[in-house]
Image (cartoon, rainbow, N blue to C red):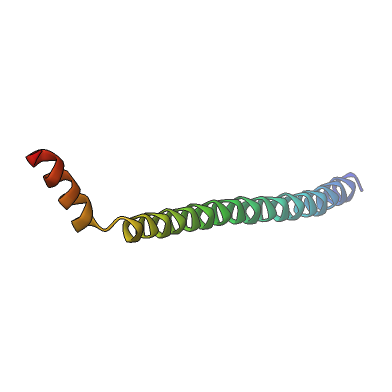
Length: 79
């Protein structure tokens, strides 16, 4: 009889540990998804900021074309 009681105890422990492992793994997956989402948002914000910088640089260059800037420098250099 005692052998069966010990086996029953181990069976219940196995079920409880299985449920615990499933819960822990689920939380690990959820945390990994949150971290991945955070890094994707960080990457997208970096890319959008870089595109904004490129657009601002192109707008600045279109306001002051490089040839006119060079001409101004050469004019002041000759004076």
